[in-house]
Length: 220
Image (tube, one colour):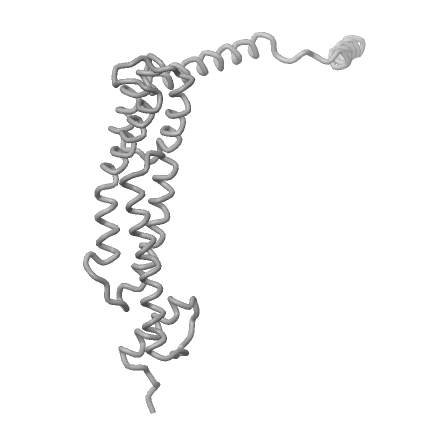
């Protein structure tokens, strides 16, 4: 007598059920109709979120919101990708759409940075060549550079050489080099001071050494 094995269609329903309900059942615990409706609701809810976050990506002028939208969208796409083998999606399917977004991500980031800077210029009434007050633009740059680890290198250089330099008169990367050099000089000075002065000796230790030396001489 062989082992019982569900047919492929039934097995896929069981797998889908376990994804949707976060279970590990060996058999189908709901009706196929109920399972289908749950899958439709699951996909619909997440696709609405994906579309909403995608709209935010191409319109927001705030880096913090931009990356929050992106992270939420990726989370929902990953959840949709889990049910791709079991649910029929319109093209592009979630996995393809995720790849499309990530392939264009650098362009999305650059567009968002330019919108952020343009909005700051508009808010403070300055043209592209106007002198920028660090008190006004400093917080804008702080918000932009907070996510520097997520920018491509070429965009970080653009922010540094164009935006940052227009506010502080020096690029961000040059400022970092100066700070690193200053910290290195300070560390060298501290090391030299420590080597020259050392620790203050304990008088009791010095007295003990003197007494030991005298005792050795008397013994001889």
